[in-house]
Length: 303
Image (cartoon, one colour):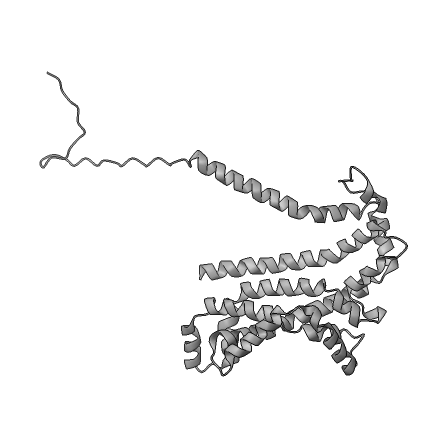
């Protein structure tokens, strides 16, 4: 006769035996999921390298002679002419004065674009007033028109005002933009709840208090993006400053750097050095704004 061993079972008249449940085994990710994740990381790394290579190539050429650009194979490591090219740029144009002018223009334009566009976008998104749709349509039509069409009328207006050659001729026409109004309007419509605006109205808040305490705290990511976009666009603007600025002491950086190209030839080492000088402030601003952009998204997700 065979006997079968069974686990302890609690009887009515016997002690109760506690059975400790076994821990579930941790499942390993399938090989297909691991391969897909590795492939994504490789593709992202390759894209980052491709995006970074032009900046690295610009830095490499700024440390070589002008003839290095025609060499085959091209140089991939920095050379020994960084100081010579830097001194050549500084002795040819007044880089620091041009950079100060450009920084003044870019920061002023960015501040007023964020202020005016956010006010207009908040009004379009959360308030009703006569002619709202028609006015917003007119704003969007200005966004669809090429900026080159406004060059001649703007120059005539600046001439009549006597602003030709002044930095305010570059600043004032750029104090507001249709893109910023559209971008922030879409953001306010999706992020600012109507209940918050109604509660603020019941509490006695006017338009500007609702704008400061309801709209702006939730719009940090959108404002950070618009600020980066506006600052970079204003910093790199070339055509309109070239037309309206004729005083050598008030040139912006891009116009001043264009003087390095002459009819007798182009020193590409010096030209790449000037491009490197112009792009370094943009990289700094991008990293500062990107941090605010990511912090704003994280804060909004936690709330």
